[in-house]
Length: 253
Image (cartoon, rainbow, N blue to C red):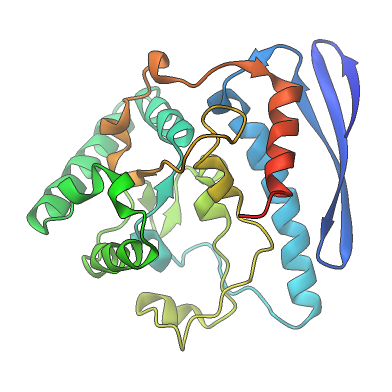
């Protein structure tokens, strides 16, 4: 990774292997220290470039992505977000103007009521107890069968699309969109990803990727910390933190 400083920003140029092609790109990093939450816009832009290369390669092989605006079936799924993303989303909601802020809070409250009635709310408060993959799949299916949309879904489209979580950015299917309303292993075909940035973020609240996996259900972001600054992870030089993230991409998981 090469660096070039300019006007309190640092351009970091990198080269990354994506399947049978090489992705060459650059990101603009703050010159000062940042938290993971503050670095998320950079990581999202980086992920979009990486995923764009993955999708281009899949389409060259005839695997056309069927996801499009207005198809919101996947937005009824349980969405795991990192702790930094939970803080950022809670802060984003808090800073929205009225009456949109109150409408969204009402939707989160409605979703909480539905999850509580289904016996899912308490079970999702401590996701550390869902370390087993089968347990996550079971609770994920229970959640999906409720048919409750993400509070940020409006007119079958994501109302915070530029700020959507990493897990949502990674969801691409090549099967007919109609199958997404009743997902089954034999009907849903997803684009295989060489690496999932969301899984890196679950372990990256320390800015180094050395902590154990921790995630928050998107439905619980207002309870997870409410976006309070005192819960933010440590601040590190932005270049160092971005380099740590690149190291995690190359680390087998």
